[in-house]
Image 1: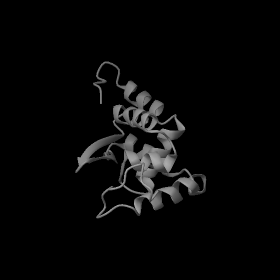
Image 2: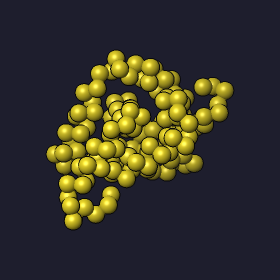
Image 3: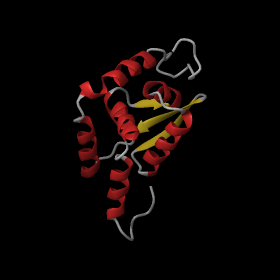
Image 4: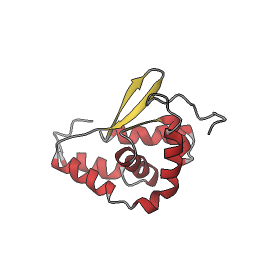
Length: 131
């Protein structure tokens, strides 16, 4: 995350801006509720978004220091960045208060998509006939 020593409140503003988009909020909810990691192709399939839009949303979440990227084999997985910071804990708790019923379709698609993993790793791209 950028250095906010000049105006420390900007960190909070960046986080709230990052969460002010429905797609980014859904990505965060999925990371916190369904699994601790998810790859781009899984997000694309779960949310029905194109690769460009998903990558753009992930970049905003990364810039807000809410998630980080880790390469595992040929796949890049995105993880929620955990912190002991009281504000970050409140953000996690707030995102998790979104009722599951509002995410019913996303949960169903996510469970189906995650069931395609082998040994916990994404092995199927977005062009898969299995999807």
